[in-house]
Length: 99
Image (cartoon, rainbow, N blue to C red; front, top):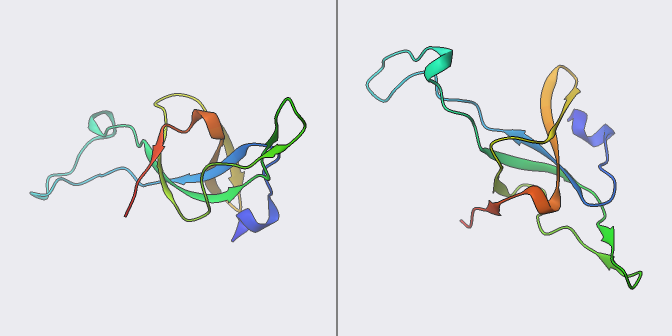
C-alpha cells in the first residue's frame, strides 16, 4: 500500500512488475542468467494525464489494476516501503491485456 503515498504526475504510470519464473514446470531451478526479463506488470497508480496543444487534458490510456506489456528497457525504478516499482510514460507502454 506504499504506492498510495505516491501519485505520478502528468502522463506517468506506476507499475509493479511480475516476479520472474525461478522454477520450470518440471521443477528445475533456473539460474538468474537463464531467467527472462519480466515485461509484464500491473498498474498500481496513474497520473491525471497530459495537456495537449489546445490546452485540453488528455487522460492516461490505462487504469489501476490492468495488466500491461512493457518495453524491454526504460522506466524509472522507484522504491516504496522496500518494494520495487517502475515509473513509465503512458506512451512507453506497449499494450494492455484484455481479460
